[in-house]
Length: 83
Image 1 (cartoon, rainbow, N blue to C red):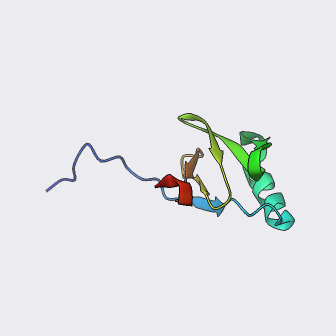
Image 2: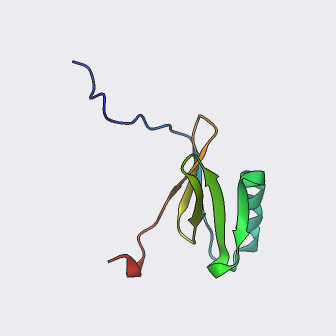
Image 3: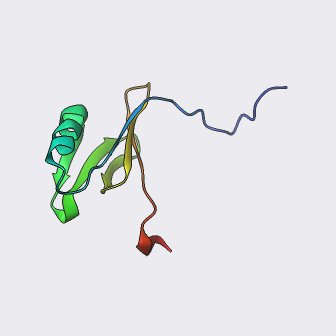
């Protein structure tokens, strides 16, 4: 039996979490990893990442995933205000 055709295939790749504002070392690592695919966002130490869906803002706690296809994706963390 074949898998369902409508389910998107997930590309397993590397991922980094957006660090808290005071974590300078991990921010340096994140910026080196993202390279030209990201830009700083003034609000709350966020980063704007170029994804296949367009620019996406990632905040502290969000995961940035680099798929095996070489594209970045953002998985947003649940926040208290997301109720």
